[in-house]
Image 1 (tube, rainbow, N blue to C red):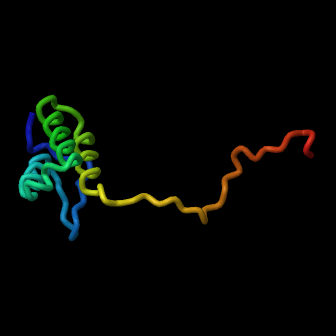
Image 2: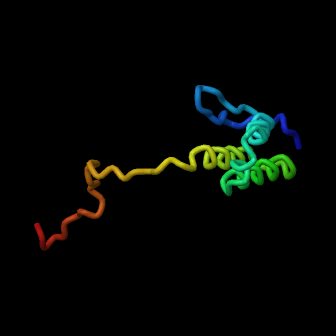
Amino acid sequence: MSWSRAFDDPVPLPRGRQLVTLKDAAEYIQKLPKAEQDIEEWQAAVEALLLVVELNGPTMMARIGMLRALNRHVQREFNSSHQDSHWGKRKLKREL
């Protein structure tokens, strides 16, 4: 049960910085303004950090929490220019 445990893969931050350990992530969250710390995604990230440290859980849980909080404003877009796959396009014998 240690805050010095490292993430499997560092959490990338803006401007090329990275969070390497659980302690780095906790300090990053503590430096955020209080209003931002109260946002639901950051609260979930804190909870994931605590669960990983207290229960010796997988660091991937905390990493996912951090990434979700950091990327909460990113909208995923559907790329309609992508070609359709051939799956489900099989022809029946009677159509041949």
